[in-house]
Length: 326
Image (cartoon, rainbow, N blue to C red):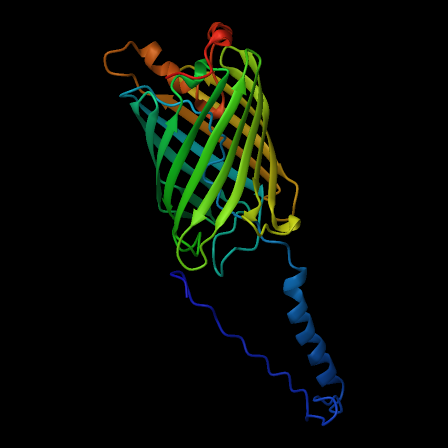
C-alpha cells in the first residue's frame, strides 16, 4: 500500500455454470455465461494492449552537464521547468504520478567550493491536475577539471543523492552517477553524459540513461543545438525498445541582461517516451565577494543550459590550451 491510498480488490462473479468433467467449464447455461467469459478474457488481455510505460516519468531536470562550475565562493541559482504537452497517461506505480499535461521542475542552488568542486541542492516539484506536489530533495557533488570553459577537451563526474516521495517512485532513495566528457572548438561542442541511475532497497537496480549534446556557437553567448536523452532501463537487462525512452530536443541558449536562458522542445520516438515536451532553464550567478559584478557573473553565463558560453576570444585562445593540467 502506498501513502496515497490502498489498492482495491476487484472480484468478478462470472456465473459460468457447472463444471464439466472433460473441459472443466460448461457453457450450457446459455449465452450469458459465454458472454461473461469473453468479458473476463478481455480484462486479462487489456493490460497487454495498453500503452507501454515510460522508463521514467519524473523529469524535473532535463540538462546535459558540461563540467563548468561556479567560481570559488560564488552562489548560483537555476530554475528548471519542463512541461509534457503529450506525456504518459499510465503511472509507473498504482495511483502514482503521470507526466501527461504535468509541469515538473526544480530550483537548483549551487556553490563553488574549489576550482574543481561544486555542491548543489534541489527541491523538485510537479504540478498535476491542479495539485502542487513535492518530490523530496536532492544534493549533489560535482567534480570537474579546472577551467573547463577554456579547454578543448574537458571532463568531470557528478554524484547526486536523491529522495523521492512515494507518489513518484516505489524506491525512494537513489544515486545518480553522471560522467561528463566533452570536446569543443570555437564553433562547435559535443558532450556526452553516460548516466547510471542507482535505486536502493527492495527491487533496486542500476539503470542506464545517457544524454548527449551537439551545439553550434553563434557568438555573444548564443547557441543552437540538439540534445538527446534516453532511458534504457536496467543494465544487463534493458527494457524492450517500445518501453525505453528516447527523446530528441532542439535547444537554444542566450542571455537576457544578467539572466541566462535555455529553451527547448523535445519529441519522443517510442511509446515509452513523453511524446512532446517543452523545457526552460533560467539562471543567475551572484557576485563573488571581492570581485566586480561582470567577472563574477561570467561563470554561469558559460555554464547555463549545458552549453559552453565562452566568448569568441576565449574560445580562440583555448585552441592552444593544454588538455591536461596538474
